[in-house]
Length: 124
Length: 130
Length: 95
Image (cartoon, rainbow over all chains, first blue to last red; front, side):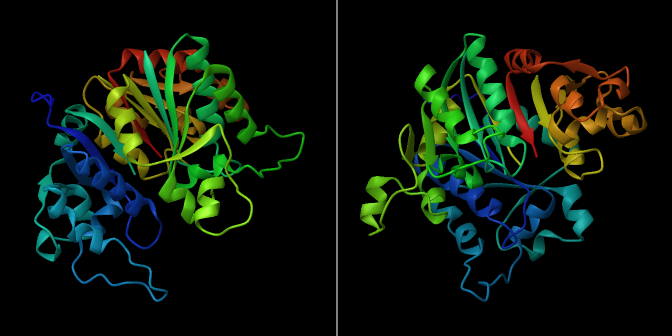
């Protein structure tokens, strides 16, 4: 049933940092549900969303789980296409050695291509 | 064409709800089919049965319900996002031992899988965020 | 060809995200606070997508900006918004 001419079914763009709001968590939830329904999912971390990948995140003082436990589950859901906007990484001064998961850097001029090659793009 | 709408903010918080309503009405006026409006993130507050805005302001919750009644547009509310925010229909209120409910038809609580399904099934999905 | 909607002003970093996501044919529709981007003084921010910028009439009108638009920005009404979503294969919203 999958259209092989497309990069994947769903591209979820994550642009918010963990803990500060529920955008990141609710964006990831869509990705997990789609993957559970056998959809091919790509995650693109942009801007502040890149900090979701940092090692060493903790629960908040009121027991807020944050999103690191969810990220750790991505592999179980066969979500292995994790893309990071290189420009955003540079502006935050982060490198992929600091990340909890293997990611692929994306040059600024490839982002438009990514958006165009997915059947559905959801921006969080 | 078949359209789906994804609404991510609460009424009376940002202009997102007004934009989504205007756009959805324009779609219907042009003869398009709206297969569903999906309410997610703070958008679930659009289903708040008890919303009581001043009379000289548009009643956004009623406006969605009217759209559903007149054009058979399904109003689908993410159940996980809704329960966290205190938006429960009769069934969920009973399940959680709560008196009264805060969501009523035509809004229906449903899973996130519906959003993915809508997005991939429809010709167009248009998102309105805060 | 994709349509991108943007509801943030040109002073917001979200504009840069939207621009990064735009392909060579893609169109940008400014809605809500995004219509502040129709002001002539802001046009340099949109240089990479010049000629492909649209702004929603009713959001300009309600903000008193209707007469202040740069001539290169194409003003569309709500029916024009619908038409843009028909013409473009998909719509990506930046907010």
